Image 1 (cartoon, helix red, strand yellow):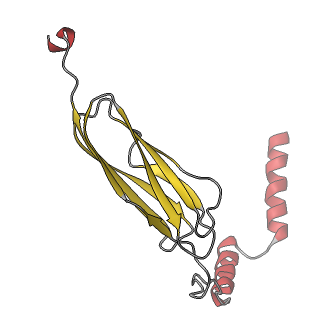
Image 2 (cartoon, rainbow, N blue to C red):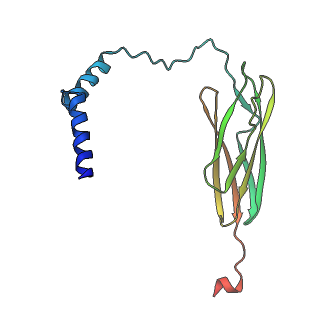
Amino acid sequence: TACTNAASKIKDESEASSSTPAAERQASSMQEAAQEPQTISTTVDPNAPLPKFSFDEESHDFGTIEEGTIAKHDFEFTNTGEAPLIISNASGSCGCTVPQWPREPIAPGETGIIHVEFNSNSRPGNQSKTVTLNSNTVPNKKVLRISAMVNPKPKTGEEQG
C-alpha cells in the first residue's frame, strides 16, 4: 500500500499545482518565447584588430620514404595580423598524422611552428594527409597538407606463404 499511496500523492500534487493541462501550458510558453525579440548577433566588428597566419609553406612533400618511417616536418608561420593569434586546436586527417602546436598566444609579428609527424607504418603507396588548425583568425580554419610516396616493406617468407 505504500507504493499506491506514493503514486496517489504524486498525482494529487501535480493536479494541485496546475489546473491547466500540460499541452496548453507548453503551447502558451512557446507562444511567449516566439513573441520575445531575438537579439543574438554573430557579426564581427570589421574595424577590430585581427590575427593573421602567414606561412612560409602550406604543403610539404616528403618525397619517397620507406614504410615504417616516421616523417617529420615543421611548418613555420608568422602572425602578420594586429592581434594575438590563438590556435585552439590542430587535428590530423587520420591517426597517422599527429600535429603539435603552440598553446600560448602568438603576438603580432611573432613566429610559431606547427610540428607534424606522419607515421607511414601500414600505409604503402601514395599518401596525402591534412592538418586542420582552428584559430581566432578569419576564416577560423587553416589547412596544411603533407604528402609522400611510401615504398612498401619487402614481404618476409612467413607473409608470402
